[in-house]
Length: 427
Image (tube, rainbow, N blue to C red; front, side):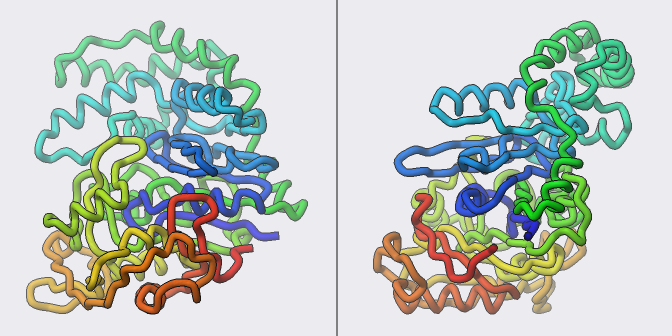
C-alpha cells in the first residue's frame, strides 16, 4: 500500500489542510514530519472551521491515527491547548501519537526568538516568534531537549543547565534581559510531562510496521518548498525541511517506502514574512486576491503578500521534490477577472530566465515575465467534475499543468470539504 507525501509547492499557505483532510478518510496514518506551531492549516468540515497549528490535519478524520514525528518541534502548552480545544468541540483526539524523539520548544527558545528578531530590525527574517528556529538550532548544536527527557528529571535538569550556560550570557550581556533559571524551566516542563505521556510513542517503529502491514500512511509537510532551509529562498526560510526528503528524516521512513509525492499549489501565489517575491502585487488586484482569498495567516494573523501564479517556482518544486501530482487550490478566488497574468519566466539583468536562479542576488532582482490568459465570471463552487468548469477555467488549469511539469489531479473550487474536483485518485 502507498506511502504518500503531501507538501506545499510555493511559500506555504497553499491549502494543505484541505488536501490532507480530503485524503484523511482513505488513509490509516497522517504524519507531521517537520516544523512546529509556526504552521497553520484551516480545514472546513460542514459548517465548522478548524484552525490547526501543530496537530496533523488527520486528527479530524475518524479512523485515522494522527502522528507528530521526530522531525517536529513541539511546544507542550500549544499541543495541550489545541487538544483541549478540539475535545471541547467533540473531536476524538485519543489516537494521537507523539514521537519521544521530537524536540521540545522551551520558554528560553521563545525568548531568544523574539529578542533576536527585534534586534535584527530591518534585517529581520520575519519569524513567527514562537521559538522554532532556536529549537532547531539547539537540536543541531546537541543541546536540545527531547520529549523523552521529560521523564528523567535528572537528565532534564542537566540538559537545561547546559543550554542556558550560553543563552544567559547572550540574553544578559547582548540583549540586556534577565537571566533564566534552570529550576524555573524544569518546573514548567515537568508540569506537562504527565499530560502528554499518554501520546508518547516510538513512532518510527509504529509507522514502519504500519507500512509492512499494508497500511496507508500520509506524510504532511508544514510551510512550503520555497521555505525549505536548504532549497528555499535562504535566509528567508523556515528552520527545517518541508521538501519531500524531510519526510524520510522527520518520520524515520526510508525513501523506498514513498510511492507518491503530491504538491499543493494555490491558483495564485502568496507568502508571509520577508524575502523576495517576484510576482507580488501592490495594487488593487493584490488587495482583491487578499480579500477574496481570505489571505491572513492561520498561525500568525498577518496579512499574506499576494501575487499572480509563478510557474517558475512551480517547476522548481516539481524538480526538488520529485512531484508526481499537484493539488490546485483556491481556483474559485480568480473568478471575476477578465484577464489573468501568469509568470512564465523571469527577466534578470536583461536576460530571460526560465528556471529558478540559484543565486540569491539574481532572485532578488528577478522581474516576472507574464503571459495573460482569459478569465471567467461563472460561479465554479458547485462544480463536481472538470467538465463542469467554464472553458476558460479549464484552459487556465491545463496551462498551469503544462507549465508546472506534473499533472493536476485535484482542484479546490471552494473552502468546504466537498468543494473539490478529483481528476485522478491519489490512492
